[in-house]
Length: 356
Image (cartoon, rainbow, N blue to C red; front, side):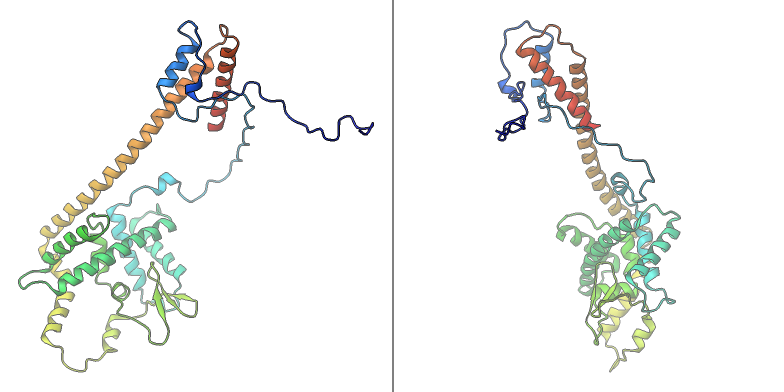
């Protein structure tokens, strides 16, 4: 060994073994013949309440507390609780109305990009709602859900409309479509977007995207879930220049329209007027279906609230027990009982520090 060295070369700086390390499994607590009361009663009470596995006995020093974050401006993005605020029926209807208005704007040309399109949708939506409570992510996320469900429902409705029996009207077809949607969709829930669908179904741009009536022959074109067109050159555009009148004149008919086609066209073009003709009857049906959907939503929300309340009650009980342990004194304890008690108090302190 080098005489200049104070320690052997193979010496490793080791911490002494923790003499107070104990098996913390509740079934291995030592059985002691001691008077009932005080600390022993508290141990038995804690065991009967089945506290969480977070209850760990330890005497090792806890990690130092994390430094507090500097105060600054709060982020503009809503918190998790804010993001979970359910959308109202009015918001959903106004979002569909804003999408139709933005997609059919005759002033903007074919150069409108995905980003500029949704800026316009948000601007119109904020103007209609007279509020900016929803951010961009919330709006696009809600629109994807509206688009998906309205596309599914529209497909069912159009199929039933084409095969409807003689004497049935559009309202009968609508009710049948509602029933079929609820029975065939995986969630088995009522169609939640009736008013948005009524806003969308007669829009040329909506028909173009959901029915595939417009396809470019010169370049491959696909649709993303948000309604923007994507061409093969890598740029994202939204074609909003098509005029419904121009589309009709660009497709001359080779012969007069047959009776069946004329009947189908007249039926499709008069959907809105037929719905309006039923007036209060249709409104009552829509209100009934919306109420049904709202009841299901409230039930799900109550289940979440009940689970949260249960967790809060458990935390409150744990906190109360922790405070009782910290207030206790070890004057009448010695030996193994004292070691166990001190380890328990240190574990409580460490847990309280971690929770902040």
